[in-house]
Length: 365
Image 1 (cartoon, rainbow, N blue to C red):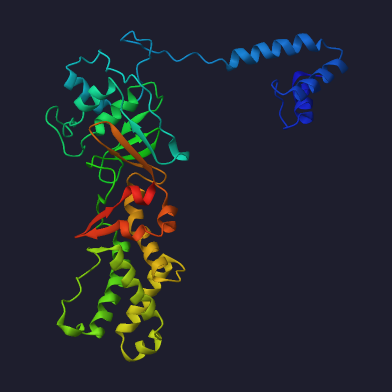
Image 2: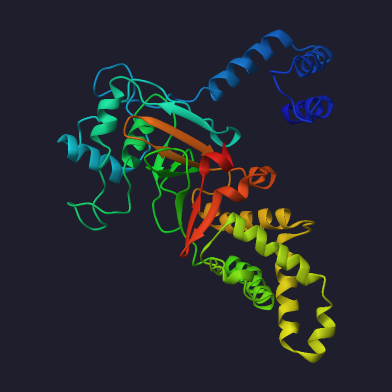
């Protein structure tokens, strides 16, 4: 029997269709085959294991410990952020960046909302780096508003530590501020974790604007038929696709549901405008799915409202983090289902003149 025939027989009889010296059953099969061939199974298996161990043993990655503290220098990271830190500390390119003295958790995509508190000596550098920003592209001095307070502090805390997490800066119009092992992390520095915080403008989300236009357009049309309130009271506050709160959205969805009970196809034969309204409602329903109440419809619309922004920054499964200069950091992992399940979610989402505001703690904690 040739060596190829031996391997073929061994593979054929092994559990998984390929042999493994780590599997006792596969080793027993090999011993049986070798015994039948009157070959010294013990010596051959021993040599095979030694050869496999030698092949599997990779050359250890060369590590550098330039500051002699017994901790290898960080690998990966961001050259531009490292350059900012070195320049701030007046370090040359061959001098190491100080490392954080503590490890801080990051659960990754399978994690959940969590807090960290910057500790001890780390807090000194955390505060020192708080307002650092990299220069504009192509320049070596000055700063850019593309990086907010605390972003480089957070980068340093995780990248230059024993955490084993590779932190990159990916800032840009449609990118999260940082990535932790490839997972997006959008950094905010609001003075407290609670309350509604800005998530940016949503003018580029044209489909969402169209959906809101249908909802608040029908709401405005219904209000016209209602007339002025009795007693000459003040007219209701004007709302539109760019300015509304959760209560406005819920009330507008009530009008939408009532409007859909009308036979629009019959009206469209008399007034062509109703055909367009019917088509817009069909588009709205195709996006929101099956909703049975104004509350369900409004929550579905609220999720559609924030989803495109969050899909870009920090991305699905990523984290929003609010950092404070005292080292208190709150990470919220994005979970869309929480928006739908939270009976109070509409009270924590609003739009103000085309800018999005949400309460991270109430929606994602």
